[in-house]
Structure formats: C-alpha cells, structure tokens
Image (cartoon, rainbow, N blue to C red):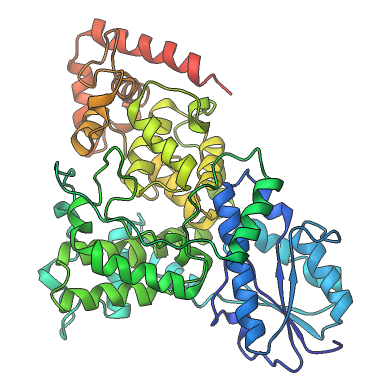
Length: 513
C-alpha cells in the first residue's frame, strides 16, 4: 500500500465503532493491531488478562477481515516483532507508506506519551481522535470539575443521569424519588442463598492457541490460566450481559457488598473486562438494566446500583485520571512507605479474608469491588503500603485493570493517597466490617473480636494503629471524629499494646521500603 491511512487499533479499543475506524476506506486503508511484549510486562500482568486481550484482538482482526478490511496484525510470537508500539508503528509505516496515521486516544497516560512521538519517528502525520465510547468527554468532566472545592462522584453521577436520561421521568425526577439507593445494598449473603454461576465461554481454537502461547511466554507471572472463561468477542460479551440481567441482576443490589467463601462471583455482572477492552458498549449495558426495571424484572435498588457503577464510578474515575495526571500517581498524602507483603502474591497467611481474596485473584484474575476495597485495599491502607507498590499490584493482577480505571480506584478510594480528592474519608475498617459482610472470620486462625491477644485479628490492631498515626490529620473530619475520640478514650496501656502488635507485625510482613 502506498497512500491511504494506517488506522491503529489498540488492544483495549476492540469496538467496531472505534473512532480510528471512522471513514475507513477498505480499498485504501490498513488497520494495524499490535501484540507487543512491552504491554504484557509493564507490570507482570495476570496470564488471563494477557490471554483475554490477545484472543479478543485476534477475534476482532478476523471479524474485520471478514468485512473485506485489510488488517496488518502483528502477533506476539512474530520473530520480527520489536516488542513496542512505537517500534511496530515505525515498521508498519515503512511497509505501507501511508499518507496519514489515525489512532484513538489511549486509556493510559504512558501510551499517550508514546503516541506523541510517532509523527517524528515515522515522518507521517498522526491524528489522535477522541474516544467516543465513553459517556463523558474530557471537556465535559473538566467543566463539571471547574471551581468545585471537592470532586464527589455522587454529584457527577446525577449530572450523567440527566445527560443520558437514565432512570428519570419526563420531568427529570429520579425513579423512586431518590438518586442513590446504596443504603439498601449492604446485606450479607444469607445461608441457603446460592447465586447462579456465570455463563460458560469455552476456549475456541483461537483462544486455545493464545492460552498455549501465554503459558509458554509468561510462566512466572502471578496467576493461573486454568478455567479461563472470559468473553473474547462482542457476541459473547452481549451474552454475558443478557445472562446477568436475567439471572443475577434481581439480587445484585441486595448483595453487591457481600463476601462469601466458595462464592467468588456472587451476583456480580462480570462484564467489566468486556467494557474496558471495548467488546461491550457501556450505554447499552445501562439501557438493558433500565429496561429490566421498567419491565418489572429487577428492583430499583439493583438497577440503580448497577447503572451507578458504570455511568457514575467508571466515567468519574476516568475523568479524575485525565484531569489530574501525571502528578496524581505520585501523591502520597498519608506518607505510606511499607513494602507489599508476600501474601499478596500467594504466600501463606492466617487471615482467611486475605487468603480468599488473593486466592480467587490468582485463579480468576477477578475479585469484586468490596474484596478489592475492604480486604486487600483496606489492609494496604491500614498497613501503610507504599502507593506505587499497591497500585502496580492491582494493575497487574486483575483482568479488567487499566491504569485509567485502576489508579483512581486504588490510589484515591482504597489507600487515600490523594488526600481526600475522591473520598471524604479513608475507607479504613477493622475486622468487624469484614465479619459483618462475610463468612470469612468463622474459618480464620485469628479472633475477629480480639485486638491485643495471641490470636488478635490483624485488621483490629492495624486499624487502631492507623487511627493513632493519623489522629491529628483526621480529628476535624466529621466522618472520622468518632474513631479518633474512641482512640483517645481508650486506656493508654491498650493503645500501646495494639500499636506494639501492629509495629511487630508490619516489620515482619511489610518492612519499610
């Protein structure tokens, strides 16, 4: 090819309507997809995540080719593969000699900086287009954020509901008279309630070839490939959404914060991987849930909670990421400087909750939001794990993790490293919360009701040590004043005993960096 446009599609942009393909001329243009080592190893990504993206890319290429589109797909095991986006774009420009290169803006700051150098490297004009798959543009978010003292998701979410007309009557009044039904969505899973399993997506020949490749190339990455069950096509992603709406959405709201042994997915949708790599449209998912509500097939608390996760949280964290990067990732408001414990990578620990959350992460590349926030994230917050270490861990181990969504959720919500930009208080909790929302504690080596004894739950003494370390910072925070007062009303001997336990424990499992 000489002339025409080289249209670059990245591995998380696998949508037929992606902006880079707008105006595609099959007779003149070439679509470039690149499987590169650098993207597999910026952190040691979970093998299931690598396999998901590579398989989805290959299925996407096949679908484009079936439409008569010229596709240049660089495979990971191509001997000539340079291992980087820049290297492969340069090779492709030399092969095809295009008149222009078009790419959709990437999801990560690092990749945007890489793309900024393509024009100089290739000598070809590069057009980077806005990613229209998201429901809030950068300009819209910046306009909402301008002049606000705090950037709370709840108020942004209401604006998004109005913008897209979701769960509103003709006068703009929210369904049920309230914007948010989160208070109804905090029930532990009762005994005898058995959530239905997710649909099965057995590997086809393309996926199996990828699984074999990933197993051979990344044997030392944390995580297993056995039981890989992620949608890798748009059709599979829509099937996953339909099964969720039919089978699990009705009880999703009630039990979305619950945790239970042997129930890793509960009533969750399991569509975040498909949303984040482009196989599923976010507005389509929201509309499907809204339709179920109006048809009487799902209650309002479930539907509103589901829509809030997508239209609210997902769009909000992307807005925060692009508004505040690159300085955002370097903040460390609480001065956290401890190393990541080995049990985040599967080493034995007596804590049943950590064992469950990390174990299913290893096996499934998945844990739901409460396990991430209130177990692994809560421990990192209480222990004072260095932000870079815990951020990299979350980015590495989950199949749905891309920096734009992972970083604000971890950095801002889980470990409060942004100093309260996202959350009005740190999500710090003792073992009592985990005991209330799960059945983990009944099978634990530690005593969830003990904070100082031989079998004391680490979350208990770490919680009070956290409050003591940051008491001056939080004493005037209305949402933290109570635990600070509680600490000051304790017997000094008890406080000292808990803090001594915390220091000894942390020095053993999470030494200072």
